Length: 118
Image 1 (cartoon, helix red, strand yellow):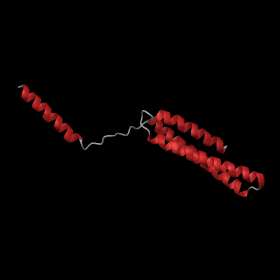
Image 2 (cartoon, rainbow, N blue to C red; image 1 turned 180 degrees about the vertical axis):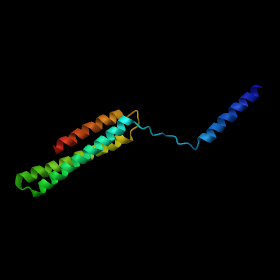
Image 3 (cartoon, rainbow, N blue to C red; image 1 turned 30 degrees about the vertical axis):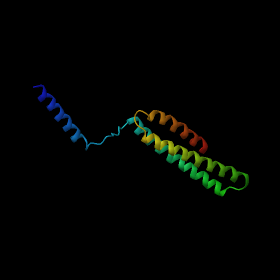
Image 4 (spheres, rainbow, N blue to C red; image 1 turned 180 degrees about the horizontal axis):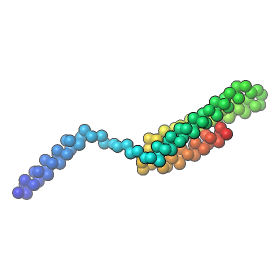
């Protein structure tokens, strides 16, 4: 009787392993707050990109010291945008347990980007 029970358990366990092998091992969890934040930051980034384009346009038309200042501001804004985009991508890929810390990092780089454009 005991052998039959052990044998049944062994067969059942091996059946679960065989059947379970085809299933994906990772599951992406949708986090509503993150999804909303991603959409919000995408919209804000588009607005800031327009401001950077306006700065580039002003810099192209400017002369002298004003041109030097605007060119430096455009360069800084580009660097800050690249830093934000990198953090933003990391945050979007972060697991549910780590996305809060990535959110803080992304928020600070976003604030720096915004400050460089304003």
